[in-house]
Length: 368
Image 1: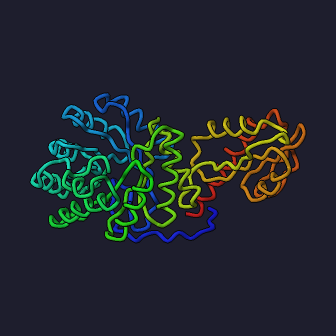
Image 2: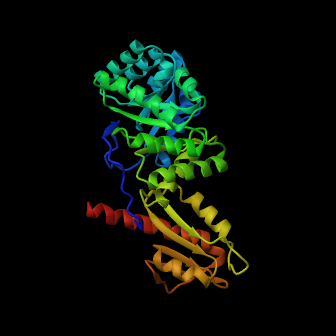
Image 3: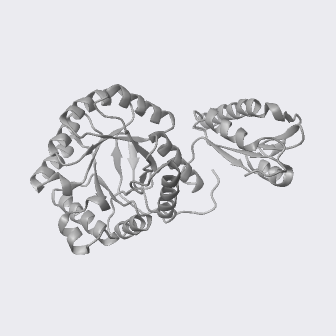
């Protein structure tokens, strides 16, 4: 994988969500959350399976009622992906989720109630050896902290986090990660920067309630990339008002751009102009959709003319440079003898990319 900048990651402790390592330089894991009703077990299971197809590492499932907790038990038995039970207000739901096999809990201790209830959750998590995420959100700060600062500020989020961390420490529980999320990019980023210097626990990063697919992707990319480029963050979730599958795709795209983790086909494509010799936009869009199932990291350049096409093709695994009627095809930087008919580009490139992905998979297997 290409890398141009060595990102020195913040040193952190190691925890596990199921078999997924988090912290201490483990690969940055990509999370998402189901948006189905948990009581609709079939729909929820199907959504988790769809998330698995695009490479999700961990899935969070909301448990707002006792009926949802019973459904969670069934869901957990039907999927392989580690599941985090998302709990608010009622500590009994957390206890049920632990009993039914949750790989991790996400709680906001401030809305669980008194410390006795939080301690019951911690003791149960200790007994089953599962971690907890302390999830602090700008929209649900403790009343006394909000009164002190007036509005959510980075310092307010960090104070809330430290308060809960100290309580977890007092109970000798260290299997936890922390998030200090806000929908405001600058607020969230600064809170993570401050907190990252104060604790050694893994940090779950993201911009909460980021918005629609387009605007949410922009906000999340700016905020998450700012943190990751500074070495802050051990696991992430892109929060979009969209199909959760899109959250995972965007998450991997962010990691891919930063050369922190790579999955699937990385398309290098021109924005097009009147020099293009074939329909670049339609070609890239169709190939991206057709090849979503490929997990092998592979760079593919698709450029509509010779201005930048040759240069990009020479540094990509596979490359296509537009020419009149037939376009030049490159493999491992070398131009191949046979050109591709422009009207057959989508079909032929899909075949060639799949063939190359299989070759790379075999090569990687033999290296192990």
